[in-house]
Image (cartoon, rainbow, N blue to C red):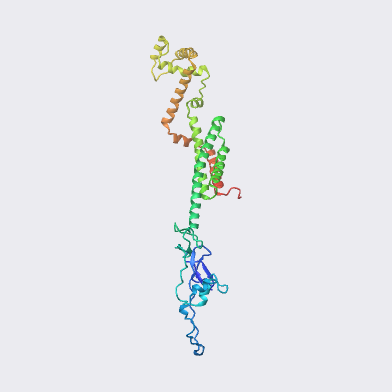
Amino acid sequence: MIKFRCGDCGQKMGVPEKYAGRAVKCTKCGVGVKVPEPEPAEPPELDASELVPLDSADEPFDDYDLHDSFAEDGGQSGGMDGLDALAELGGDPSAPPVAATPAEGGGNCGKCGAPVGPQAVICVQCGNNLKLGVNVKTIAKAKATAGFAGKTMYALIGGAVVACIAGGIWGGIVIATGYEIGWIAWGIGLLVGFAVAAMAQKQDAVIGVSAACLALLGLIVGKVVILQWILSPGNMMSELGFEFDDPEVFASMYMEKMAEDRLYEPALQAQVDQVDEDEYYSDELDEQLFEAAMTYTASMPEGEKQAYIEDTGQEMVDAVMGEYSFTTLLKMSFTLWDGLWFFLAIGTAFKVGNGGWGDD
């Protein structure tokens, strides 16, 4: 028995001595390893009486054609293959192993030394790709790694799309109902977690963290949609309590516009011009201006009314945005309840992506 180690991974192996000089596959890593020659044993001392002189009539051993001898029975001799027979016939045990004879027109594998045919691409002994010089297992692992990386990238892109759509739907529900329903925000985390894990076709810590981040993205998209709606001119006016469907409310709002555009009758407009900007109108003058505005706006086209409402609302929005940035307003829109629902949504997305859902 010849005992040796794999030169690549250090795996211990043992094979019968008849495999000395051959290439075998490592039982652990599959790399081709050449079996070393056994340590030569010291020859026993011979008694002079056992020595027999060589008969001159016998054929000298040097002229013995081993190739012809093996060719007669197809390379078999007494049930042994050619290498076994050569070992039986003798030879210098300390000599280096003879390289395997390559197939006609072929060569030897550069990894394990096994013979390969002229058209061979893969060595059947060790799996080495003869053209690329890379083991097929290495190629397979590289392809698998590239496949997983590609799926992960598609999962991130797809997850981002799902998160944005889900966040937009949540914002739409808030706009339609007027209520910021928290459990829908939680559902965004659950949906994104399942979507990312399904598209990546795996669940691990990387997918879990990715799903959590994308869930946060979806939640922020929802909050942005809600804030944009809050800052819309029409909603801004409604939030401030202005009901433009009421003619009296609209007329009272339009009084200032009529004074700026000098739309009152000349006598009434002259009284308005006499009032300083930092002073209030008298009750009598205010009543006259209101009556004039009611009369004027009653005949105003609806398109003109709507344009005034939008312009006035936009002025209010501009005044708010002039004081606060959109990012600041977004931060101000967050509440403690938002923090709770966001925590549940992000945690759920991570647990689903990490593969921990249902383990408890």
